Length: 304
Image (cartoon, rainbow, N blue to C red; front, side):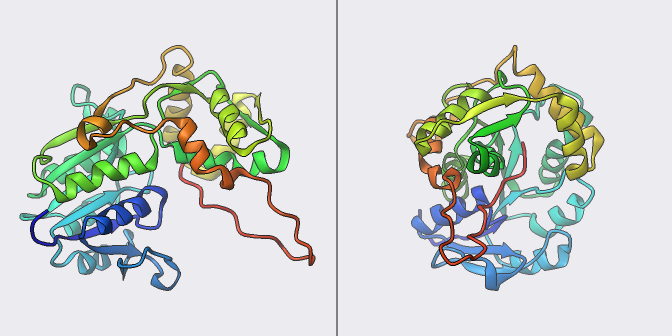
């Protein structure tokens, strides 16, 4: 890899960011992790926590001072704060690897690319070199079903026949680490998916298989989900777009790429493999023997 590179990881405690941190440490990079609370970050040994918040760009600039590269994911459903954050993170002599989305396309109007495309545009104009990871759906987002599965052995949701080529967070991270530490990735837009489309109902079955108990899919009315997500997300336009996208996947499954293998030399992990890796997250919680309140819940990724 040559001389040791200093990399700032934004979103270091999330499903993908944690794997990026681990991967960078494994290849000998100096890793800074942007976290809101360093005392509670629980980072891998060797990573240095830096207190910061994307809502306060000056804290981001302090954490990024002197780094060679940045891994960025955007946790909001709009790009209102993005100009100030990109200004703080990017600039000449720095390489930015941005976790974007598969639905960003260069041949469509910018307003149809959503906030992911807007952040891409800002990075392109920042003076940094860059790599965009246009990922499909995250397999880890199915952790949203964990509470239902543990409590009832079923998942109540919509569009069970929607087929998604969900990508394992470790595969996203593996590509990110290559792009941050090796030459040849500047200006590339990598579309990342899992190796095959799997319907949501089949995903639930595979989770049950990994856990060792039957798990059933129960289709519910779209309007019921719309109300639930409206309360949680607030952004009606983003919500309507997400529901329309999932509906379309019933007849037109998500595409599959071989980019993970092309970049890393290793085939993308299947959803079955992901479910086995995360079986403990879906297993029934042990009943406390002392009348206690039980254990904490696993982290849930934002729906994508």
